Amino acid sequence: MTDLATVTATAPGPRAVPRHGGGSDAPPRWRTPLLFCGPFAVLFLAMYVAPIIYAAVSSLFAVRRSGLGLAPPVKVFDPLGNYVQALGDKAFVASLGRVALFGVVQVPVMLALALGLALLIDSRSARGKGLFRLAGFLPYAVPGVSAALVWSFMYSPQSSPVNHLLRPLGLGIPFFDDGVVLWSVANIVTWSWTGYNMIIIYAALQSIPAEVLEAARMDGASALRIAWNIKIPAVRGAIVLTAVFSIIGSAQLFNEPTVLQPISGGAVPSTFTPIMSAQAAVAAGNYPYAAAQSVILAVLVGAVSLAFFTLTGRGAKA
Image (cartoon, rainbow, N blue to C red; front, side, top):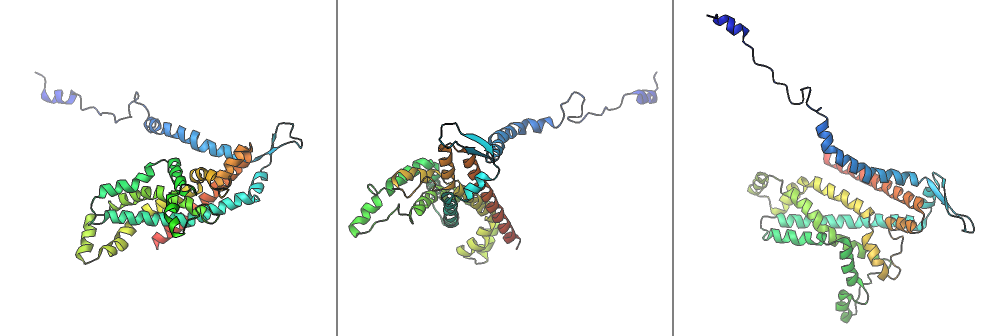
């Protein structure tokens, strides 16, 4: 009979199971994240990084035409020529100032409206929240060009129902006067995007713990005090996010003034915004100059966004 101790000593022990990815036939661990990130990286490089690099390189060349215009235009390397021309172009500089004024006034007004609507819908006594959320978000669901077309009908001197109602009172709103047309455009943008920002802020309000709000009510805090001291500080990150998006969107202002341009009577020129100015340069066949204008706009927007993040970050730490 085989000795029990001998059998126990010679019996094979439990084999170590190789960890996932540790076997010789298993794929390396870096392949899985690469498979997931690869498509995004390719699209990001092709659709975002490559156009930026191409525009920056194109801006370093200038288009030269012969005096008689008989020879085809040629590109020559002139690193600063387009930038000097753009910064000396009064129409382009005016478009930058116009968009800056637009952002300084329109963005705070729009975000204040979005915050107010979000707080009203989030209030304890609000009824029909779903209906009001849908009604606030609905203008954003309308394409920007379609919304601008509808508002062009509202602004048109011949068909404006607003001025038609005011005419018996001897009043009228000059929507396309030089000092008013920018705010006519701002009204369209505010109408279209307030609901979008409201939804973002309202979603942030839902993350506030109910226990915190209930404790404040038990301490006797009014609804206004709760909104000012608890809700608004809690959604500060969402407000900063929507502000940055709005700043970038203001710099990209194009659809609304372009739609209003044919009926504006010259109040909306082809260089009304920086994007429209670059588009006019493209239409004229001067792609390097349009690229230089785009690079200048991108640098300014990046600087403003960075400064805004810095200021808001310091305010949060304080």
